[in-house]
Length: 203
Image (cartoon, rainbow, N blue to C red; front, top):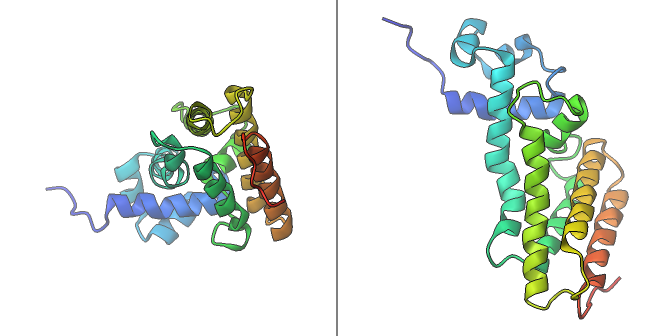
């Protein structure tokens, strides 16, 4: 008879997601995981096989929960400019919230590993593609409904907003002054308003 588990796999993944978000892959040792998760090394390896496999599970959980929460609204069938504005308003406040000094786990991973994805699962590539697709969806809808000017190049603008969001994540991770993050978010929103047929941005 095998050993009876004294832990919940889902809880371990959720907790490890937060640890990796704070310290990154290289900065998180197996001993740290053992201590923070409250399981012994044997159980950790028996459940996940390796630190890399646990990290992969954490990235998947982050994508399913946090990325979905932030960018899912932009992928809705009726998403438009309002959803993009709401996203940047949310990130404008993030520098003084629980994400300060932590940023985004997937963006942090992209910075840590660069073009190399040791998992082979292409989490970072899919993350970039998802963000770009979300902006493309919302901008495309806004253009179709006549909210944006007919001359707007949706593909180029989605690339711009993707870069803007990733830049905000880096600043939030680095604990940039709240005013800097807010100003950067404001410029992105102002740019969006400039694309509209009728702009109402207060400046």
